[in-house]
Length: 286
Image 1 (spheres, rainbow, N blue to C red):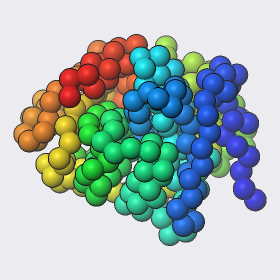
Image 2 (tube, helix red, strand yellow; image 1 turned 180 degrees about the vertical axis):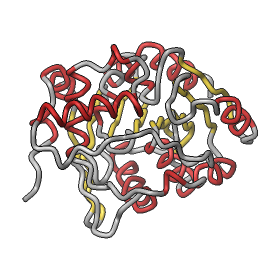
Image 3 (cartoon, helix red, strand yellow; image 1 turned 30 degrees about the horizontal axis):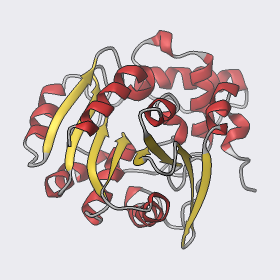
Image 4 (cartoon, rainbow, N blue to C red; image 1 turned 180 degrees about the horizontal axis):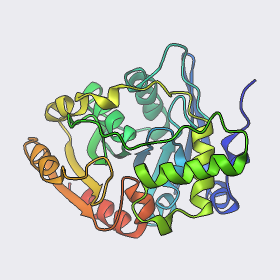
């Protein structure tokens, strides 16, 4: 039996943001992608790709402020997450490149647009930019994996075997703290509810490519400009910021790495105002 829409599990404040968007669906073979769009059709497009085990709600605190700057903000639920469906046999990022690129051509309706990708979405954005270089003019990656650094054991806890909702939420709260959010005070009930809804709709749980160096190998090949925004306290990069900076600065088309103070891996959610300003500034510099 198929799951109910993600919206059935979202808190009211998230539903209000969703209600101000337009929904588009694209079909590529067996892959169906749900897209949400904020802003006017005449506005310059900005595509945002969410992270693993996520949905458009990874950008909940960014879509409307960015649209208010005169952007048409376009956010898919990536195949296998949220309300989107992946084709049979697609288990990781490599199987998403073609259907997402096809959807982008259909939804965005132009070539040479700006794209920001968070974590898994940053990895996917890099692969799309390599496979379809005419599509992306400017790529901004935030907390992206697959850069060749040794994967950290963060002590994430399993939750699917728990039947009690409070017990599940306690695990989600723990996992948010060790992976996504730096300041414990930012892990409120609202954030736990968002995270729980996303986790329940993750059908890509056997992903492994993020543990490779595929993005590190891909970024030097890109023709578009590349910038980065990282949480200064990103749990995946503790003790590695100097190495990350050096790696990115060796890229032929790299511009700037912005470090957001007091933010963890989910940087655009934990420090949205700072992130939104940084992204707007980087995109204005191309």
